Each structure stands twice: as C-alpha cells, then as structure tokens.
Length: 325
Image (tube, rainbow, N blue to C red; front, side, top):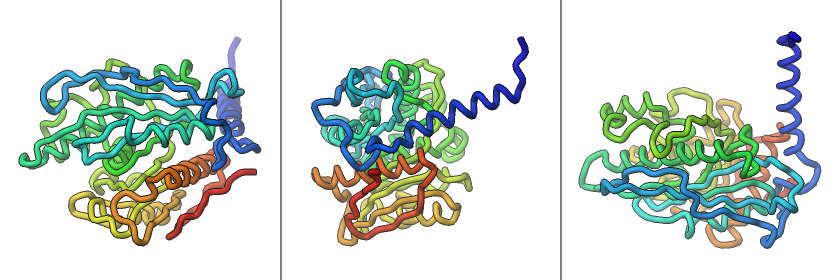
C-alpha cells in the first residue's frame, strides 16, 4: 500500500505537536514548583559513557550521573533532558560536588538531568593549551550526548527536547558544544583534529546525533569566532555585574559574556532571559536558595519553549520564577 507524502508529513507533524503539547502541561510539571519530592527521585551514577586519553596521556573513563523521577510514580514515559557541566577553569572541579544538587532540582520538576565528568588539565605555560582543554571538554560533552541518545528509551528521554548548561567552564563547554564546529576549530588550531581526534568520534564509537534546543548559562562566555553569524539558541543566563574572571560583556580572553549574548539574542528576535547580580563577581546565586532559584527559573524558561510562549526578560534582582498554572 502506498502512503502519500502528505500523510507522512501529517503523521510527523501530529507526533511532534503531541510531544510538545504533553510537555506544555496545565499542571506544575516542568515549572518553578517541585512536582516530585526528593524521595521520589532516582539516580544512575558513575555510568561510563566513554573513555579517552587525558592531558597527562593516560586513558580515562568518562562518567555520568542521571537523575529522574521514579518510573513507577511518573506517568510520563519520555521527558525532556538537560546535561549539566561543572566548572573549575578546566583544571579542577567534579560532577559530584558542583552539579548534583542542580540535577536533583531539575529532576524534581520532571526533567531527566545529568551531570558529567570530563577530562581536565592543561599547561598554563604552553600558549593555546587552555583552548585544547576546551576542545577535550567539547569532545567529552559530545560523547555524553551520544551515549544519552543511544540509551534514551531506557532513561525515559524524549530526544527532541535536549538542553545543556553549566557553570563557568561548564557554561563555556555548553556554549561551545552548541556552536563550535570542527571546521571552526581547525581554522584556529589546524592540527587539533590530527592530534586529539575529531569532535564527534572521541570517547566512544556511537554514531547518534543530537540537537540542543536551549542553553542554561551560568556566568559563562563563548568566543565570537564560533558564532559565525549563525542563529543563536534560546538561553537563560545568570551573571555577576562585577565578574572579572568571565566578564559579563566582552573580553579578549573569554569572548562574549552573558549580557553581550543576551543583546544579540534580542537583536535576532530569539528568546533570552538574563538575571544580573549588580554586586556579584564570578559565581552568583550558588547557595541552596540560589540553586533553587536558578533551577526554577530555568525550568520555567524551558517550559515556555514547550508552550511556544517564551518572552525576553532582563532583571537585576532575584526574581523568583512563577510559571505554575
């Protein structure tokens, strides 16, 4: 039996609209409110998503932790996913210490959230070696995403709604993963692929692809060279006005900070949400209350994307999210 192109297109459209509609729920799921309690959250920790040679030349297992509502309680078989990356100047930090609490906050709101380890370290005395550390982080993030997509059914993830975020170096990793291509890297570092392998083949042999739909940027930045005039993704950001490590505007070292990127989003007509701490330096709203504030605001921002109701927002105060029905 022949199936018309029109019918196929209609089936695809209906399926896509259904997935979006169920996430644009009229209850508190995916909102600022905690839809599940802490004891209703399950986890799969220290899952090996890949293996790669680190900065010291040693083979390193790459680990990821997943947090999600208990499958016997949650009525949804597929949920949106966010990958969170810890900071630490690409020299230190860990998934356990820096992103576990945030992952649980997202899971309590109905998301599947994960925090990943990645290869750290570089030689500060070698020019450009810090950029090579960023390249390794992007390789690892790509590998973590491929692994997640490969195991999406088991994890209860809808791969049509994937988000990424992090803090400081983790936010830099999220931004470069969203925007940086192999061609752009090779333009600035011609031997990087030959030296470290391709962005999309390091870590594991999986061939899965993914598309990031939005970014959760916490005091991060990205090089303007990787943007290359392309359309920006919806992004929610938190940044300190007085940040002298990753400046909020433009820096010759770190690139475009959160406010510069927010202005670019406005110019392109893309949804952006920015909260500035007027007296804050590097790292803001990081205590328990601040973590809940950022998680709630980000959850609401992503839900507005599900509902196609996102609007631009700029605040210089702790404005709690409230997108509950």
